[in-house]
Length: 339
Image 1 (cartoon, rainbow, N blue to C red):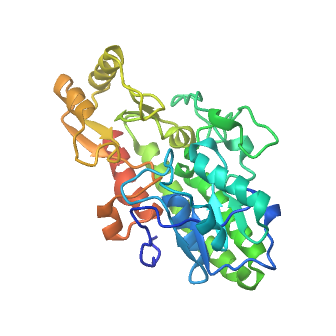
Image 2: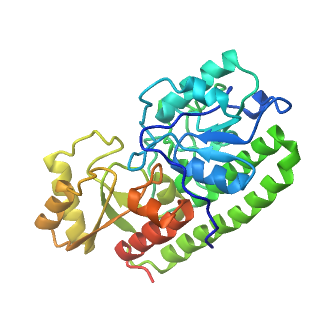
């Protein structure tokens, strides 16, 4: 299912930002909030906020096209611009520390901005960075145990923030966005509820496609030449993505890690290597080239972590659903040898 989208509003330089107060729905002052404009902290949240709000609110994403949202930081002080908007949707996690900082500042100084933390209520479903998946003994409702606390950081830096890649958990985040907007703007509550319901049906379709893909897969391990962003997908659907890089984009793989990866490619008969198109805008991927040159693999395909978008995808009008269906699902179908 592909939903009609309004024109993409992204700006490359970091067009102002948003309105925020604390990170919890309790902080919304609905009577005073002006919800004709808003901001979201990165691409996927922006897309979801747009889909839920429909024509009621114009959301903007401060992260430029071609940039990944996690680890991003603004070039200037965006707090005032954020405060001038009516609503801010973000994730209260250190991977988006700039948004946490803005939220904390606005919580102290403003009471008219609706701040919606998409991770609210998900503490017991968030994975730690050290969480390991087992493709041979997997339960979709498996052990998501991790350290949590009573603060707003959902367990701090030990939490893997890429929760949006799980389409099942994505429905809960969309619910949170819709509930937050409805609380802040009761006059349009029915619109937000209906739009969220329609969009969640589309997310359920993505979930079903992944489920069917893994049911027909002849292989349950893939090799990814990039940092490990896809644990939630692995945990949900019961397969393994091996990477020599680790969880940090800045981490350099060792010679032994690369050698181990090459051995895995050959032992599993893997023909296609996955890569992250955000890692080099010029299209140079030496790690991919090394693995292909030294192994039996012959091809490479991109997958996206969906914290940002590329100009070519923007030109196509691709949001979260389209990128999942046009990029990630075909790539996993190919590398896992699924029908």
